[in-house]
Amino acid sequence: MINLLSPLLASDLSKKVTDEELVQLYLESQNVAYFNLLYKRYSGKIFGKSLSLLKSESEAEDATQDIMMKILLNMSKFSGKSRFSTWIYSITYNYCIDFLRRKKKDPSVYVDDYLENLDVPDDVEDKFLLEMNVSRLKVILEEIPTGDKTILLMKYQDEMSIREISHILNKSESAIKMKIKRAKQKFKKTFNEKYKAQH
Amino acid sequence: MSEESKNSFKELEKLEEEKYANNLLDVKKKVDGNLNSVHSMLNIVDVYFSKLLGYFVSMIGGEKSDKGMDV
Image (cartoon, rainbow over all chains, first blue to last red; front, side, top):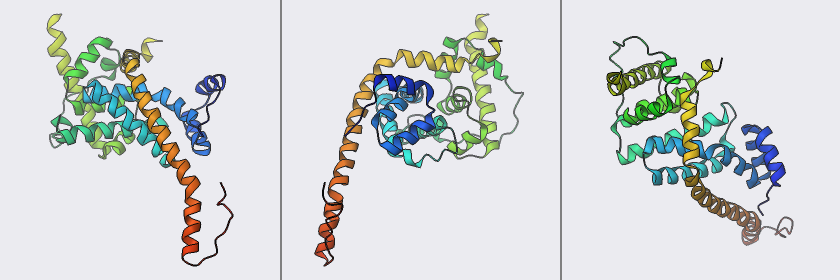
């Protein structure tokens, strides 16, 4: 039967035990309480990313439910080569991208970028994005294409490396660098159109 | 300095998590339901699989072992 840890132990565990240790504990004991702790840590983040990409609360709820079940059923496949968070986010992004592709809801996620055009202007500084006012950041992320938003979230919100992003999106590292560059440019262009005129 | 470590993307993520906390309560109920079903199914497999295997072995003429069949 399902065992539940005492609230004291659960709160203690939630602070001290790493994600990877919780995975191990769950796999060894099949105790749902360990999975619940992982759920507590990640369900909000998964929902937020799903909502950001799918733009519908009900679809994001369904996506979060499906993704959590996927994680549960595939937990034994987590090899520990990457961080657990990276593994979870890769499932989340791939789920949302597949969903959008199936529904053909947003062409920017299934039409590949115009990578052959290498005439790329100067980089937009990371600082410009990282130190932006949060409400403006939210507005601009809503305006740029989903493909650009996805890659910016991976890099700046989830702090994934170029290598990790290239594995998740199944693209070369140089293609990912180019996509990030373009997404940052699009971000800055949208910012300028929206807010520069106000100053 | 705190300015150096500022990350508006992380701040946005945190705000969104707080804003949509109620949506997650509904999702949790559904996940719990699925979780119970999965565990019940695993229990059923665990309990009856050895029995079925024993019957199958005896049907094809093997010796039925009681070991592992008593639940």
